[in-house]
Image (cartoon, rainbow, N blue to C red):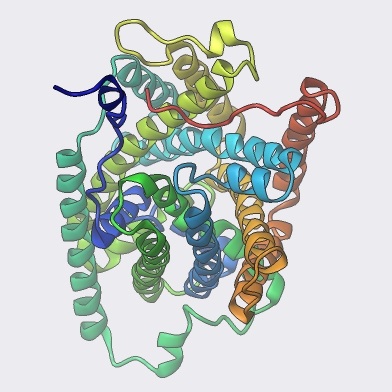
Length: 453
């Protein structure tokens, strides 16, 4: 017969540690998507003036430094993998609040970007229909599916991942065949995607990279799985870095091939969002162009749904902690357990924003504005914990976060003036709200954690 004390020592349920290193890597690649640079290729090419590959590689360096900082901080806070947690606990709660507020911009802008891209992509199928009608259609589609509690299953993700792989391999195949049949080509031809002698300036490269880092957005999600991973102190860091490197190499190969098919840049505003599929048609004809467009459209619909639900859950977390009106934002639908009000609110923001912004590049810069602030914050948090306060003041603990911070800072400063102004207005509003809410940041700040409900 067990004693009362024994009965009370039963452990509470906890998450199962079932994920290995390559499970994490696969998760990260699926979140980012192996076709990540394709939707924005034309925008990246215009911004970099034909040097997209170099911008993707610069972005990879910045993200690898930041990924190391994320992995290191996940060791310290394994159950709360988030930039605002790292900054708030290591530096100051007020700065954590600012970082969290910048992250809300990412969550809100992401479904907006998906709405814009899907609306523009439909022009390839229905050229006579204005994208604005498609903005309404896709904003409604994302909202209605989320309100019904429709979630993309792991099996569907795997099938979609495999389909993307087939399309990517087919694209590389027709590109190699085309280049072989039109050769021989000079060494300068193969170097052109890296270097445009007429536009090779730090300003151009940094501006192009400030947009191209959109390719890597999502890698930080790996840190949120710390409680479900074997040996998280090792595997979270390795997986985060590997995902950034694999994404960078694959993305570089994709845009390099596209730039060889159509050297230079100069896509019009109307064709920039659909440029990759049109360029692929040079080598593979209408078939490969159609396959790429359909694949990207399906993938972006999935991303739009996920992004909208993620934003709704973030708002729910803020509402539940009464950071914003709890009666509206902290409510759950009793049947679907979905934050219905927030899903609708994010859908409205996506629709109105798509009508106002209309262009993929403007929306992408706004998203990167918030993301780069969060990345800089994580690098500073890592520097503070491991080098300034830590006992092991190694060169690695100094140089990695400093380099990550400086590169991300340079990219942030080279966003367009519009993005800097609009983003700064958002940040000023957040700081003012936080100051009022906490009486000059003297009281406890709100909890920005995204709940799992």
